[in-house]
Length: 557
Ligand SMILES: Cc1cc2nc3c(=O)[nH]c(=O)nc-3n(C[C@H](O)[C@H](O)[C@H](O)COP(=O)(O)OP(=O)(O)OC[C@H]3O[C@@H](n4cnc5c(N)ncnc54)[C@H](O)[C@@H]3O)c2cc1C
Image (cartoon, rainbow, N blue to C red; front, side, top):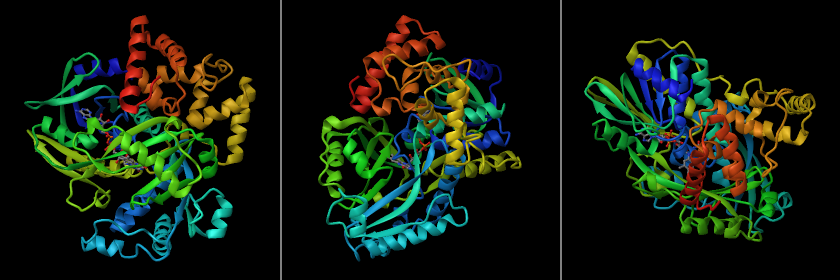
């Protein structure tokens, strides 16, 4: 349903069973499960879907090998299982990711885990080969029979330098294991929501609608586009507001201190030598200060991150000049001969981990596990979804839905473990079948094979929706790797409210440095034609995009 239709509908029928506040990945996971189980659910976000922390991740679908050191076996086991499910259910967006750990010591780090339990740890010792080997044996064992990726391997110095000639010559070993790479997590988050709404009439999702407060037994929402207040009744509120959980609770009249936010930033660089040096592999390693950092392949670019700094106001998260310098410098640890310069940065992003409030000596030691906190206002129960990883969204969604259904006395009738998402539906089962799919589509539509391949990489089987004999490929004049087809489709079908929704969350166009002043004008005209934007509105949207890029990502368009 279109946004206006849903608002009209809830004004006439203001009763729902559950209101989900926050459409990041945890809200989306809860929405998906509740929708599948027939619970009458409304999902809202004060901004676009996936515009908070979930849009700032390191793009890894992972079990989190380093959390084993903190003894978080439950979390790692669950996340490895969910990583495997993501690779299976969202094959268009989550790809097996070979991950390399360059190792510079042998024995070091063995006491990190015991010291953590005794709370004697200020800073972990450098992790040596032995401790990494033990960790990887555990990590692989969690995959069990449901193997979607190969087991780990170790390479000695000579083999490592042969594989990666530009690697720091001081390296003693490299370990290689597999995780998942999320190509466009923001799009995946939205696909989960759009699918749930499309497949289940009991589920409705609204972006740009915020939770304002309670008024007696009613919950007050605000349409951020018009300022209009909308009142609804619900039995349960799922507070999935990530780092804003405590402020949402406060609006509901509940005092809570569930969240301790830590800021993490990344930069995206265009450096073909670095990209070639890492190939399609992630380099995941310990920097000189003991922090675990990463270099991640991202289309033709490289993501470098991340930091872990305390922050009190999540709205102020932004990649600082100091973090930028830190990221540039950390590359020297593994590839000392590849210079990175600030002019190679095409994008910066920063977000706040909604970690559970805990007293620890270092931010790295705070649990990465998730939990559900329960409060009550009037007769409404509030379930706060605290913590969690992107990767474990489905499991966390299932756990919260169980709580909701228990409260509503509904029996579970559906399970989301094997539900295919968005462009992962009817996805070709092998590389060979994928090539045939792309070739057939290119031939049938008389399109350039390489371009169809690129579109398939971006959208999976959704490409069938906007490329056909009746809809041949049309390129942008200002940017030959973008098509009119994809832009029109997104504008028509994917609840676009603002131009930045398209550039930053329905696609990765903005992340890859693919927009300049000319393409922005062409894109806004295509989208504006579909959405009925007049000249003024188009200009406003261009200014809004420029401002967001400048303010949040330090990028001038
Ligand atoms: C730097 C960094 C790297 C990470 N890397 C990874 C990784 O590689 N892999 C992984 O698995 N996990 C990773 N994580 C963790 C993961 O991204 C988060 O745990 C997850 O995204 C949290 O999702 P969420 O839905 O709880 O919060 P959010 O995504 O922040 O969603 C909360 C939503 O609530 C909305 N909201 C706030 N107030 C209101 C209101 N009043 N009314 C309506 N809506 C409101 C916000 O707009 C927001 O969209 C990373 C986190 C960070 C910060």
